[in-house]
Image (cartoon, rainbow, N blue to C red; front, side, top):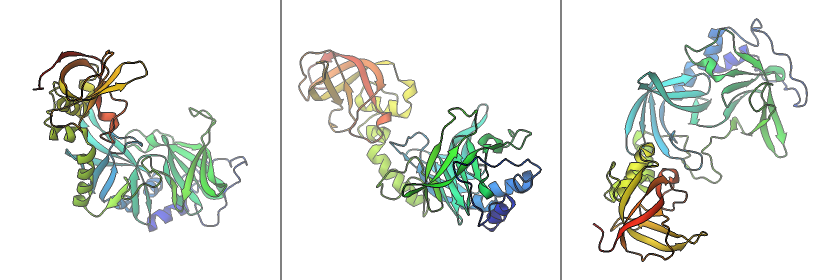
Length: 381
């Protein structure tokens, strides 16, 4: 961290500097010739991505899979060794190249037909310890700060000066000729009992004028998208002891919530859409391949007497011998309920389920929309 704090001195972030009051007009942004404001490229790169920051990223992490959202965080074990990243999601191990993009963003780059692409994550570092996740986050640096909000990095420098630089400026091969510095307004203040960091983007920014307000907790600015009040550790941006520990945590969650694994345990085969487990496994593995297609599914009625507001019958279907999970629901245009345990074949269009109670990964479970019974009676095959 010595290099980091030395670099901060170059940018004028020093103890004792006071920020201007939030309501005051921001100080003029210095030009690229002012070394205290914008040093030349080499010192700036040394500050924003020094070896110490890269070293802090080494190790094993529990992060949120890039397929998940803030409501349904899906844990991913992520091990960084030099610039090689190994990930485990409970089903597949994958390799990627670590691309550290400036002071707060990294990408897991994998080959594509046209080059490379990969999921991006935000990170922050304090005293050699990093946190990795997604969201608007940053770090207190003495009386200054560095915060990543949307597609920009904001810097609070000495004397309350604030500026930003586009995240794309840090991408190798895409840096414009200019230094990319823009004047902005940002700083620390108190909102009631809470210390916050505010950001007012420059005029011309989409959505401006707008103020972003991020909570401050010690050196941390902002929260990762996966932070939930009262959530027990390990949080899904936590460094863990080793890869085996991370994989065990991911595997436990996958067995409880991954629709593909749950469906396969019930006999489902990816690519088979004629059974409930098969349809669930196929949809969850690659929903874009079956969404809006018409399928016929053999199933057992689990709940066939739930009336909806439109007087139709909400029917839940499962596989023989597996009544609890996986399940899908179907709304046939019937005026009478079905008996639980009835064997039926239904036809409908694959759509996204809106309400599921057997997995936390609700966004990866299908339903059958506009379906109808095409066969019934007898024991299901």
